[in-house]
Structures are given as C-alpha cells and as structure tokens.
Image 1 (cartoon, rainbow, N blue to C red):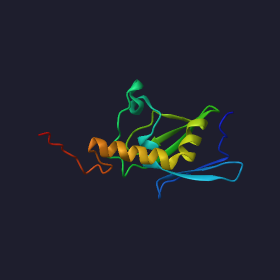
Image 2 (cartoon, helix red, strand yellow):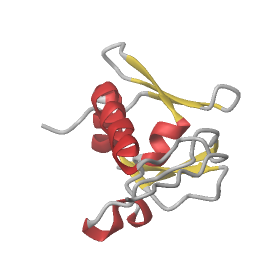
Image 3 (cartoon, rainbow, N blue to C red):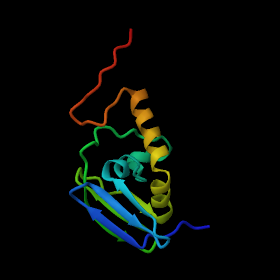
Length: 126
C-alpha cells in the first residue's frame, strides 16, 4: 500500500518547520534540522555507509520545490538541496518522528558529536 500524498505542504520559515497535512485530517510539523539530518541524499546516506550529520541545530528551510508527482526537493539555508523526499519517505519521517529523532540523538551521543555548530567535540583515547 502506497503512503498517502500530503494534501497541504506549508513552509514555516520563522519556526523552521515543514507542515504536512493529509486527507484524513492528520498534520505533522517536521523541524528543518530533523529533515536535514535525515535527508535522503547521497551526501547523507553515503552510498550505503551513512554519514552522521552534525552541527545542524540552526539550519532552516529556504524553499520547497515539487519533483514530478512523487516527491519534493527541500532547499536548506546551509546550501544542501540534493535530496528528493518521496511521499513515502515523508510519511515515514512524519509518523516515526520520535523514534527516528531518538535514534539520531543516540548516534550523536555515541560519536561524541553535537547538534550545535559552535561545538566541536574532541575525544581523548587513553
């Protein structure tokens, strides 16, 4: 079964969120940082070896473009714009936001990395 297609897509630049609305009345607010660190682009997915995205706390969205009838392209203010977010992937991000965000935060913790671009963690190995 195919994921539903959003009936509304709203970019809220001030709050740095993307709002998705669906025909069943459900709505989701997806933060730009969340969308950026889980981008479906090759830069993030790493051709099979995902690249942990760090320092994206303050990233925002500067635009949204349609990509045919199956996806949207998000344009981030850090210059990233290469991922195509299919309807299926967007719906997964929306409905699994808590689990995916927690997993991302755990990956950051395990790597000793930060969401804050002003913080650069240094690990000393005895």
